[in-house]
Length: 96
Image (cartoon, rainbow, N blue to C red):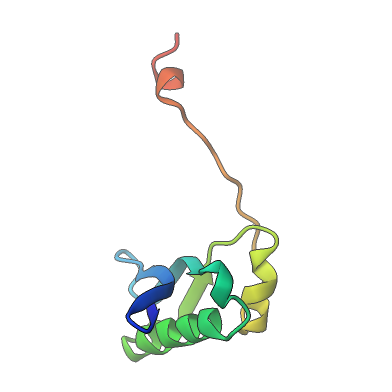
């Protein structure tokens, strides 16, 4: 979490993958509108990466859509694969 004057201005949501301890995933990095392009998001990513690498993580994946991918590329990430979003609705499970 990033704070300025005791107010949250951004956050990162990520974790070390429990079944693959050498991998971590960043699910989301958000900076509040009035604080965009001030280096807050980049600092959050850098701090997350440093903490993960200190715990023997070797690979960090960022789950992103088009648009935010440019931000992660500026942070040093590169595209390695394309993910597809899949949806299962409660009603669909019980159809038949």
